[in-house]
Length: 149
Ligand code: DQA
Image (cartoon, rainbow, N blue to C red; front, top):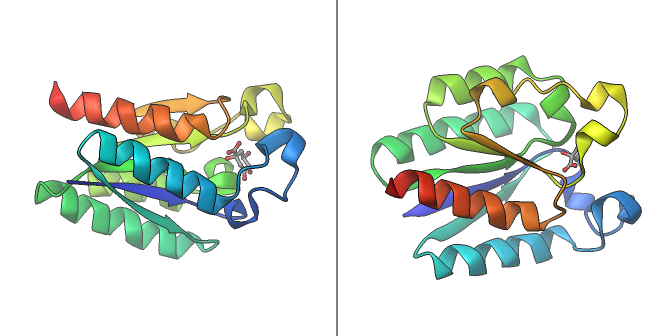
């Protein structure tokens, strides 16, 4: 089975964008880390990134279809700034009925007020916040465990 690693807007800039907040790993590094960890658990990480809200909606829908067919355990999703703005992504997760783990590299609750609210948290299976890019690894483990029990 697969696990979809989904990254939203500006996460293609990882490594160069505010390294004091997001660290020095690039998106390619994060995706390699996810592939390795998934493989260790007998999963295949499928990695996607887009700066476009509608594209992310489409991929969530696809993951729902894959999940119902028993081919995808769920989605590890860092929606970037869309976390704080997107009713469309909330509705996509709710409608697709696929387990989604919401990930944030930084601890958004230690940052600006506008990052404290998430439209995704109420429809997320779980949330990992503030552990840097290691949060993706934790999220993969969480999904793996959730689908076993
Ligand atoms: C982020 C936090 C968001 O507030 C921000 O807009 C991002 C990255 C994180 O991973 O810490 O783009 O999701």
